[in-house]
Image (cartoon, rainbow, N blue to C red):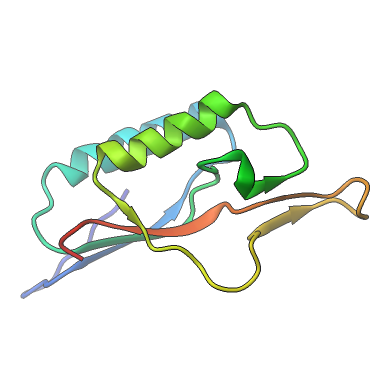
Length: 115
């Protein structure tokens, strides 16, 4: 993670791209959590977290509920607020036809309470 601040920074914006592989995502969550402990100003994190917080955010494919809970707990433990979305429910689609398609909401925007 790279953070750039200049002069009179009033807020922080972090663009997130989390690796699709679970074991390679863990260091990012740890790094963001450590950074969260130092942040005093408003902070917005957005883009591809490559993770869902519930099975309702998926259509097709296999997602272990425990992994959803782990991400949801990470959001909650860091006091992040999910800003929600408007428009199409899913931000990722894979597959050539309805029978093989998998869809998920992998992109999201989170912020701290100061935001």
